[in-house]
Amino acid sequence: MYDQSHICRADHMAVSKASRTLRRRKRKGKTSQIPYLEREYIALSQWMKRNKFVQKRPYLSAAIFNSTGRGLMTRHSISAGSTLVSIPHHLLITPHTVLTSVGQHFTKWDKQLSSQQAMSIFLLAERQKQESSFWFPYINVLPKKYTTPAFFSETELNLLPQTVLSKALTEISKVHTAFKLATDFITCCWPELAPVLTYSDFIWSWYSVNTRSVYYKHDLCDQFLADHNYIALAPFLDLLNHSYDANITASFNVKSNCYEIQTEDTYRKYDEVFISYGNHDNTHLLVEYGFVLPNNPNDVVEFSFDSLLDIALRMKLKHLKEKRSVLLTGQFDRKLCCCSDGLSWNLQVVLRVLCMDWTELKNWKLVMQGGIISDQNELLTRTMASTLIKTSLGMCKENLTKFQGLHCDTMTEHERLAYDFICIERTTLQSALISVQS
Image 1 (cartoon, rainbow, N blue to C red):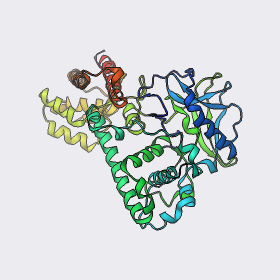
Image 2 (cartoon, rainbow, N blue to C red):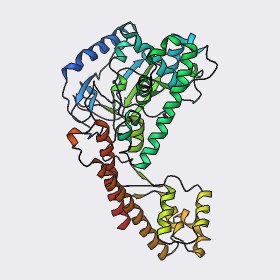
Image 3 (cartoon, one colour):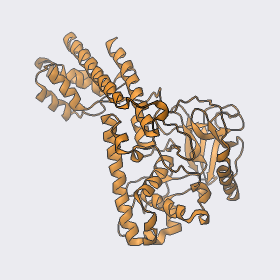
Image 4 (spheres, rainbow, N blue to C red):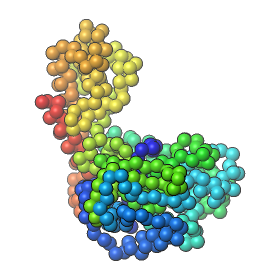
């Protein structure tokens, strides 16, 4: 789920944060403080200071930004190479934290939980304790719910384009499976926790971990690593928001015994400071983190292999059975997508092969080397690409009709997120069509 070079978390908000399903980001966004948040963050800051969290210059503080919502603001200018945040090991929530705190419950279980399941259960147990929990000041600033599709109603889910809906449903199914295993575990080994393990409680804790965790490998995590998912929650650090062009390094510093973020970017005083979750398209950002980005250079629109075959049938292209076999054998049915600049390499290969005549098909491997088969093949390929994109634009138009009668100001947060996603997809397709036709 996570890689070593990027922080992986998103900071969504319901009660404690204004909606930001569409992040119209300006890298140097200005801040606007909201007073009712101050008490929670003062308590978090005081708790961390009592537990040996010491900020060294440059100092960061929690703030509300007009373009991104809640984030971290610098109180000094920052130069490249600076350490933004350094969180002591004992303030990280890891699988080892779970073992040392409530390990007696987990050692009774004859199956293996994943790190995320174990940490999700731990969060629920600690939240139940309220102020008596060591982790209360941190848990108290976590969002009360998230904007990932798992929190959508059935009606809201059906607003999503089919390709995104399919991935969202797969993710939701995975969460249901995790919930079932967690329920079995608690029934068997921790029955006093059963009252707080409703599905709504579980998805809150699951996405608190899923959207906010950092990569952290520790040998003592292995008891839970059925999925080899090395993760940790890092209070305060997880207030940092995502920008696709943030240039950072995240790792555990053995010498300082702290998890640290270093930046190669520069910031002015009072700027918002960013990290990167990775080079993700908007489908991934929506399904995993619950937001989308306009002008995302990593964004793509995906096509199914079957949709290409349907267009080939409509164009009355021949020998489709043989062409399908060739493409599936070479595993070219994957990564079929376009971006604003044009078509993916796999999509170009598939289109050219589908547009070949029988004689050309014998030399289909030439397209893997970037070779042009014939002028006729190129003409058909361009026509098929245009048809594919126009068909998808038609689907965007149809999807947008689902929002008729809804006003932007009265849409739910989830409705607005689905609407924004479709609008961004339409813009990407329009740019791709221009690229294909030029």
